[in-house]
Amino acid sequence: MKRTPHLLAIQSHVVFGHAGNSAAVFPMQRVGVNVWPLNTVQFSNHTQYGQWAGEVLAPAQIPALVEGICNIGELGNCDAVLSGYLGSAEQGRAILAGVARIKAANPKALYLCDPVMGHAEKGCVVPAEVSDFLLYEAVAQADILCPNQLELDSFCGRRAESLADCVGMARSLLARGPKVVLVKHLNYPGRAQDAFEMLLVSAQGSWHLRRPLLAFPRQPVGVGDLTSGLFLARVLLGDDWVQAFEFTAAAVHEVLLETQACASYELQPVRAQDRIAHPRVRFEAQRINL
Image (tube, rainbow, N blue to C red; front, side, top):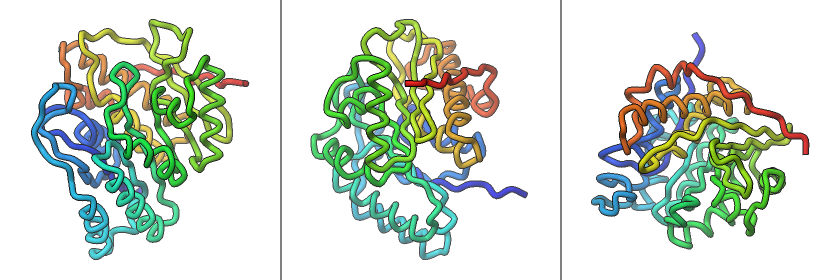
């Protein structure tokens, strides 16, 4: 029997709704990955409601929890680490220490960094110290980097002017450490207004993907967390970069279709679970020769 991959997911958690681990853990499990959730914050709900309750995990707890897994002899079974929303730069450094500990136990383990700084329409939603940590420390340690457009621009210190510009900017990040850059949401001047666009760049090439842009009264939160989680899960299950890219776009689209059908502000991964595992649609990634 083929071994089931194991993944440590270190990001935020909300009690109600779907954001951070609450958006990513179940879908990753549904496609066949064992997930070990480690929550950087526990909030009552995501912050776009404008009010919430909860607290941030003390940074020292992250290496302590990783060491606890080591003490029961399981750390070498961890195939990947995913990090997302950080409450502080100190938390981020604790995560990098945990990644190093895991890679010492399993040199083949991957680290996916989802560098949560904000969203183009919402602006930056993390303290400057967190952005600086992501820009100057985390990127060099990441095997997979999953920025959105705002974050890609922040890494490169300028705004993209075209799709070709986005490709060049993503390529420049490969030189800083990552094996692959997945831009989860492109938002460059002149892009198609009726499509949601994504970009994948590795040493093997660059691929562009479009899927329909669905209308919502308020855009659901957690789509990026869902995207990063599914991409990493599919890589661990044996997909190459492009296969994982195409599967992820299709599965996320299925969740959004169900969310739209329910007229919900919160993502609907439970209702869409069978279509997450077996998407009915396929979006073909187009190779870009630039």
